[in-house]
Amino acid sequence: MQKDKGFRRRVVTLIIVVLLTAAVVAVYLAYGFHSRSNLPLIVPKNVTWFYHFQSRSVDEAARKSADSRPLYYDSFYYTLVKLPVLHNVKDAGQPGIYLMTDIVLFADSKGWYTALTVTSEEKLNTFCKDNVPADLVEKPVEKPEFTYVKSKTRNLYFAYKHKACVFYVPSDTSLNIAAAEEALKAVFTQKDNSIYNNQALQRIYDKDCQIVFWGEGIGHGVHLDAGYAQFHYTDSVRNSRPMSPLYLFNQAGIKYSESEVERILTKNNQIKSRDYLNQTFRAMYYFLKPFVK
Image 1 (cartoon, one colour):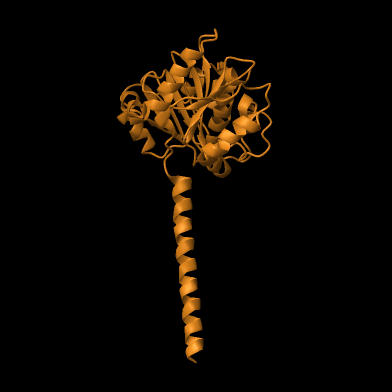
Image 2 (cartoon, rainbow, N blue to C red):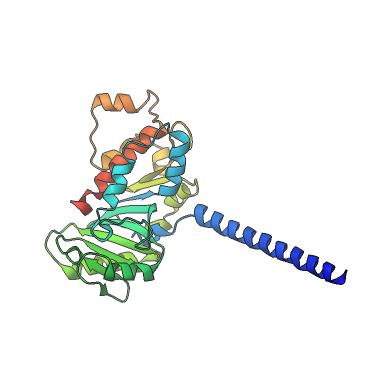
């Protein structure tokens, strides 16, 4: 009887340990999937424009609000894997990068940047040294602030450190390695001088938007959980004339005919979440073109 009680005690104890472990894991996963991204911390405050596309939450919203897969989704993904370092990646987890979780795009006077979240710097180091074809990139260069590789065929750089990696295309088409290194150093060392610390931008992030855009000192965030996209603007915009839902896409260089505007926008200047997603992926493709052409 004593042995039976002891056995039952051990079983109960084991069950409690398993349940507690499962609860801890569940909390950890929930935090990991829903906590705010730190990726925008690498964006300097003096950028011309900044665009944060939270891919996982956008995908979740797309499944809820769209009756079919967004039109440009696949072309956006295939554009992403054409980037030199990610060329022909078959397994999204292979290079140690979240390919479809968060993506930040921004530009300044020095050039254009695309940033992704790193899951394993060690795995990414190995990938860049051993898995990238030698005809695509040069050997990794280790700097105190970051490690980078340069494309062999184009003036394009890929740099990474800790939890962030950045593709960089200089606006100056001439080859200037020192200038490129300075531009990348500014990205990886100025977290205290980041646009993420801007209070107006923080108020947009507090709304838990899936997409955040900032340009020319004004910005907006977008919720895509309902049939129509819900916009949250900075105070400077909200207190003046409302911004067109197509403003972001105009910034990307996409031009709309009158018939397109009439088809996409309602008379009340609203846009369906599905249409906004389609135009978003179209804009993302446009933003990424300098990195893959």
